[in-house]
Length: 313
Image (cartoon, rainbow, N blue to C red):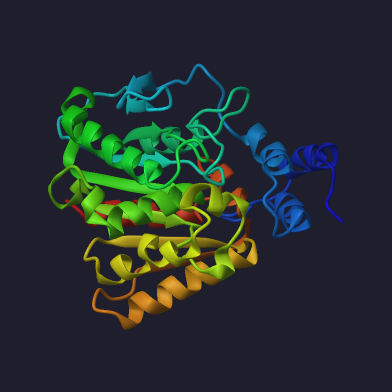
């Protein structure tokens, strides 16, 4: 049975006194994540990880909020830049949040997410760009990928303002955000810059092959109710043939659809012409904890992101 949020908070106090293996969650928080189980429960998961995150104002980082990259009110992004001087240009990490295509924001009021990803990027010598985008059903396919394309173009054109390296832009998406990132990579017709403008990409718990098995209200809200069009709107074929370095991740306690999608993409890429991606299964994690734990002592996902970035000089 799922523990209440209050019970989860009580575990935080116990975790503070418990030994933690390098790069992993405490045993108490891991147990609480396991109790939440393979469901998407942002409030209960946030209660576990929010106390571990930094609070504003943030030290050692310069934050530019709500830069406009398009004409829609949701075409906004935040830029996090390390405050320390750097003679060389920094790699850039663009993050695209989830929200089942119909919700979500780059910085929801009252919690530290998804600033935590930007703070981690800045602490690791990168410029962080955190975007929000138009939502279904008011803005169905291809609005999400169009917004990602505009954000990549904006980042490329404004990289010098923030000391970022336009040759080293890495695009990361989670859940619905991973779908938009995958679509951007797999469908170059949406790209606004030559070659897509990316040095690598990170896909965390996304959907890559649309089919009746992935059918649901949120998918229909964005991709449409005509399932005959879904194959052409999928990203699997384009991901199999891409030469872009990819990190594909999913959680042990992801809902079944995301587990299957990650495993199928990995197998398809390994048997295709592009070769295997870096495929990471995050033990003890759920759909939300894999993201909410970034910038804590849990480093299994961020270690692989750093490794991907380090390969591009």
